[in-house]
Length: 196
Image 1 (cartoon, rainbow, N blue to C red):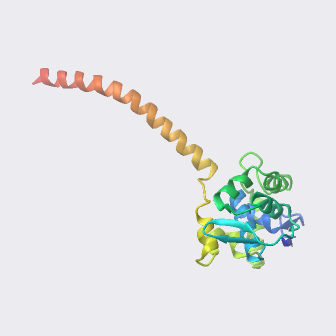
Image 2 (image 1 turned 60 degrees about the vertical axis):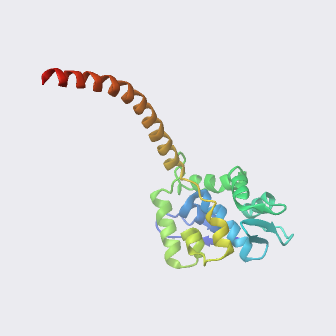
C-alpha cells in the first residue's frame, strides 16, 4: 500500500501527499515508476529477475500507480518495456497534474516549484520516506532489483532536446563550414601564395 504523508510546514498548505507524489518531486515520472516497481517487488507482488518483471501475487494493490505497473506486466516482461508502457499511462500523468494543481510542480516543464522543493526537503528531513524515493536506484543494495532498473534510465527531456538541437546545429554548421572553408581555404591559399 502506498503510504500517505501529511506536510503542514511553510508553503505546503497542509496538503496530503503520497509516496509517489514525493517520488515525482524528487525525480519526475522516472522516479515514480521506479518507486512503484521497487515497492511492489519488496512486498512480493512482483518478481524482478534477469531484468524481467513478473506478477507473483494476484492481489490488486490499492494505489492507481501500482495497479498501472501490474497492468503493464500481465506476464513476464522486460523492465524497459514495462517502463515504456508506463510512460503513456494516465495514472502516471495524474500524479504530475495533481502536483501542478497544488502549485508544487510547474505546468509547462513539470519541474518542482520552490514550494515543491521545500515540501520535499521537509519530508526528507523527517526520514519517513523510503530512501529509493529520494535517491532512486542508487539507494538500493546491489542485486537483481538494482541491476534490473539501471537500464531503464533515459535522458531527461530538457537534456535530450538540447542534445538534438546541438547535433542539428553541428550538422548545419558543418554543411556551411565545409562549403565556405573549402572555397575560403583555396582562395586563402592562392592569396597567400601570391603574396610570397
